[in-house]
Image (cartoon, rainbow, N blue to C red; front, side, top):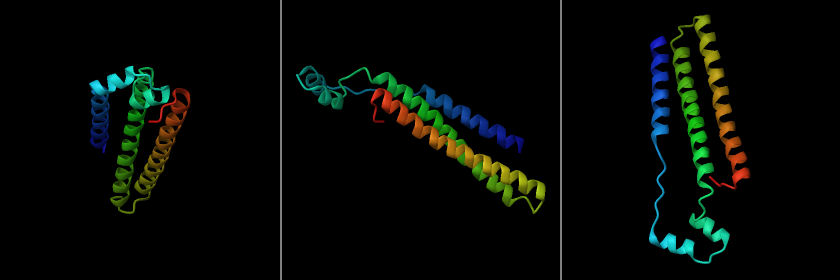
Length: 132
């Protein structure tokens, strides 16, 4: 069972490292640059992505949401592992209790990850006016 835990930890670390290596790419074209240079109102320019002030908050929000997503994936994997432990417990009370506790803690972790995702998006959306 220790090997399974080490394997899950290695996968999580590799996924997180891969996520951090990804950099956002912003595509630009001449039409957008011309539209940004024109005398549109601020809402229209923001819709076209002319404002550069919102890029840093969006990157931070993306990093936080990515980390929360990884936590959610780990929680789901642990729910599956807990179910497997329960199915193979052979009726032994100690193993059943261990699987039950793992399931409860995994569900609590998943609920916390979902709430954290919602809170981060709500707070950053309110502070920076971001809609992502």
